Each structure stands twice: as structure tokens, then as C-alpha cells.
Length: 231
Image 1 (cartoon, rainbow, N blue to C red):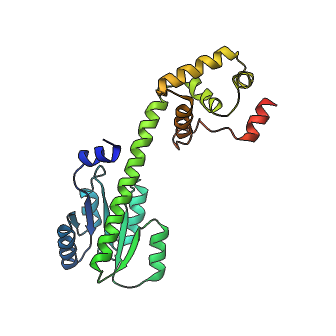
Image 2: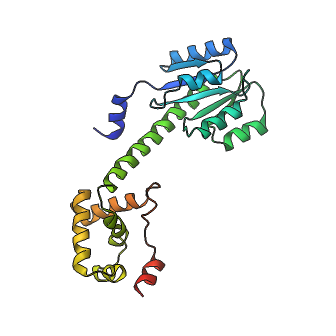
Image 3: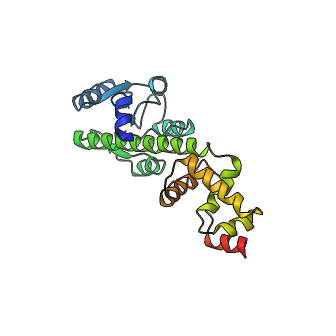
């Protein structure tokens, strides 16, 4: 069973949050989404949305630009400020190009004009849910890799970039100021802790660890750096 299948079993059906101050629009959109198999969570205010939002649930937000208690762009900014990555689809009663551009530049997935075409909305919602799922899969994989990285000692983490830099053991030892045997011991321990059985497998996993955004202490040595350190 792959990671996508595991997540599909672990979480409920995707939620589509609807934020619209107009009761009639809210009802019709909720019905449309329910008929399409989605769990629609209808909200008439920003406060109601944030109170009902479940961060562990896959979904997206369909947001009316003009609300009674808040501006849609301001809510988009608040979502960003709270560190939420929920995909967002804007609805608007007018074809305001400049506002639409602002919303899209701020990360909105789509900007649709009312009365909204049902097929266009459902397509945007499906795209939003697919994006949310993809982001969660990436985050889950990053957490798994970080757990592997944290099994290494600080010194082993420092040595890791050199082990996949293309430098030979003697060169690495010279850069680090240790004997070759020490480098070989570190390499053996790192490979064992990471559970890799071959050098190609080790290099592929190390590449992924070195690319983690939350592992700033690790970095891949570029060619110029290698010559600078070994010259």
C-alpha cells in the first residue's frame, strides 16, 4: 500500500468550505457540491469558517469576494498569516480584473464570476482538493525524511554532504582533518542508520535529505566548493 492509499484510509471525505454571506447562494452551492459527492461546510462569516475549519482534513475553500463582515482578500491574507495552505477559489458578483489578478498573485487557485458555471466550479474544487492532497503527501514525506535524518548524530549529519560529493575518502579526511578510517566508520554508520543497501540507493536518499527545506545545516557541495576545500 503506497502513501496516497494510506492517507485515503486515514482521513474522511474531502471538505469543501463555503464562505458566502448570501443564504440563497450558500444553499445552492452546498446542494451542488453535495450532489457531486463532497462534504460541503457552509459558513456565512469569516468567524464561522475559522471555527469550523479542520486542519487535518483534506479540502479547499470557496470564498465570496464580498462578505458582510469582511473582505475576501483580507480573509485570504488571514489564512496565509495563520500558516494555512488551504487551496482557495474566489467567487465574485462582478468581473473585476484587477481584484482577480491580486487574488491569483496571492495564491488563489481560481477566480470565478457569479452566476458561476457548475462545471467550472466543480473543476476548480477538484483541482483544489488534488492540490491539497499533493501538499499533504509532500509534507508527510518530508516528516518521514526528517525522522531519518534525526537518527544521525550531529557529526554524521556534517559528514553526509561529503559522502555524496564525489570526493574520495582521502580528500574528505583531509577536509575534515581526520584519518581515512574515521570517514569510513562514519560512512558505515550513516548507511546503516538510513537503511540503504547499496551506494546508488544511499546517494538517492542522501540527495533527498540534503534538499529538505527544514535541514539548513545540510547542503550539497558544488564543484567549486569541492576544489576550494581540497586544493
